[in-house]
Image (tube, rainbow, N blue to C red):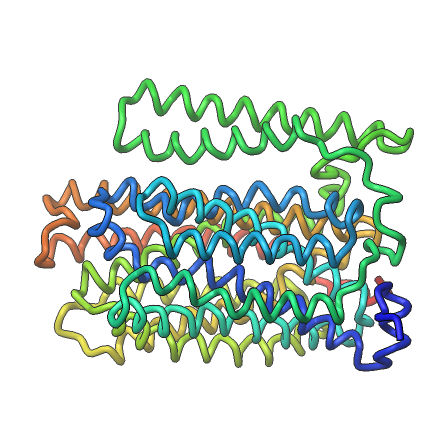
Length: 492
């Protein structure tokens, strides 16, 4: 019997359960991509010592990944239209697999950074896909439940990853964490061959639409992102003139990118090549406000993902395995929270759930700054759990609540754009946290290379957490401007 490949054939072959099998297939790959993004943070101190890196260069282990992931998200709608779900998804998993192997075997920092960029490119392509599938394959009454189950599975990766990764670093060294992603990549490739259709969104044959990829737009997005992050770093560490030129370059690239996307959007109806980002999606108020929240929220979330392991290891003098011990219970609570909140997302206004989550996340950051060297691990666990409960309210609500307002033909563009903005915020957040931390350390007269922690170092970390809390408060103000009404449930 010929293996089914199209969406219609797969639905007929597997029956009513097929949509859940499809969700499982994309969930495993997304878990692998998110794990590759977060697990390396536990090993940053060891990698820094191995390659004799300063804080600014070590930061690029995370920032390089984030930049690549941010830019590649813009290509997902085009890749899906041109190559279909299966080839796009499987290709990204192969890229993630190869990048992980190269990273684990890297003998110098340049090769390691190249491997992180490969992993980031793969992660960026994959991450918009699940939201597209949930809104297309599931009915309105099931989307919250599907999003909750998917979210619960996905957050188990960063929940378990740092814990197991911390043990691997202590037992086998930093190289072992790269190989941890490989089993997930192999499983995702097997699942994709069985359950992911070859068709493009809308159940149409791949390659019939899509036009040419907007390479000039992609180049502008890449240049703008690189200039922005390098400018932020140089703003603190380098000459003022260089940082100013880089930030001006970032603004110029952004203006040129928006102008090009606007022009391509106007000519799309005449059969022209599609834009990377269809600006028509921002005409929907719900989506526009959700995008603002997503950017600010991404800054705080990814910034804290970078800052927390460094704080625990270099501020509180905990081992990598202890860091994992602290973060594991919080990750498990996050998974449960997402599962429960997913059922609420279809019945309660998006702004209410998102606002509650942001308030809890801000409180967690403020309380984390009160921890001292003599406090027990349970205090750290409690504040980490509080923050993860906040994340559990945000994650299943923000994307689905924002995307539901879009016409179904714009859902791939909307998913790509909101993930792009959230991850761009994340890339900025990682850089900003590193900059603010170095700045406050210098003010207090301490450096992270000092093997002994001090009150001055803790004060610098506390002020960095206060900055993250302020960002959450800013996102809360934007979230409250989301529509107070529950989005209309309609077939997608």
